[in-house]
Structure formats: C-alpha cells, structure tokens
Image (tube, rainbow, N blue to C red; front, side, top):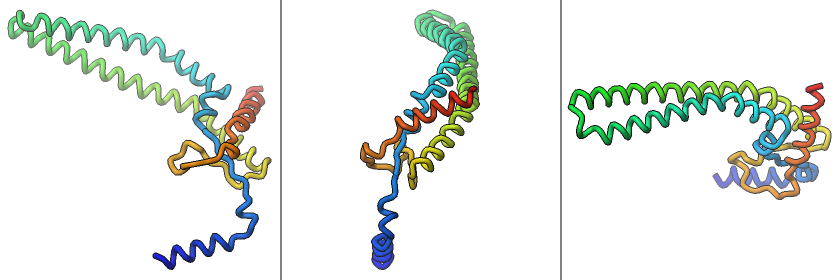
Length: 173
C-alpha cells in the first residue's frame, strides 16, 4: 500500500508544470437550469400544464378527509354493517386517489423529461464550447457529491448562464 501511495505521489510531482496550471471551472447546473431563460420557461410551462390536475387532486383529497372525519364521528353510532360499508367505500376511494396521484407523478416526470432534454443538451454543448473557447482543462458541476470545496474564483456559473441564454435565443430564431 505504501509503495503504491509513494509511486502516486512521485508521479504527481513529476507532472509538467503546465498540468498544474490548467484552468478548472466549476458550475452549478441546477442554478443555471432554474435561473436561465429556457429553464424558467420550461418550469412555467410545466406548472401551467398541471395546475388543473393538481387542483382536482386537492379537491379529492379534501373529500377523502371529510369522509374519514365523518366516519370517525359517526362510527360509534352506526350499525356494524353500515360502518363496514362506509369503511370499504373510504378505502376504495383512497386507493383510487393514490392511483391518480401516482399517475399524476408519472405524467409530470415524463413531461419534465420531455421539456428538459433539449435544454440539457444545449447546456452541455454550451459548457463544452465555453470551455474550449476559454482554455479550460475541465469544467465540473459544483453540486456533485465529489466536490468538497472550490474557490469562488473558479465558479463560472454566471458566465455559462449568460452564454446559455444567448445560445437559446439564437436557437429559437
């Protein structure tokens, strides 16, 4: 183990000086997506498309809550058969509601994927082009689990966001 570590240290120390001076950039992909023109447009489109479905689900949830509350209040005075019928009805409605919520989530994820796919493709192309143009050896996502610290001087999120907005407006024309 020590030999491997020693060999690794020696190899790093023998790297040419240019390797130490390579430019590294850090971006926050999530910030760019949330704050860029195409990202905010996609989020607004997603929200608008699902507001009515969400309102309908909220309404059904309120109905279920009222039904459960009625069942708890009336349960002791109802006959056993009537209570069982109401409990069965409540469980059936709850299962239907859960199925609808799950279907809503699946549709929402699929729509989000459809909207973000072209955005991400253009964003990664923009990052690559920016890196080549400005002589970066690498540009990494600052939100990734492997990055523990990066000085603010290497954060190029704002520059990438501006380039991305330009590329998006050019692509739309």
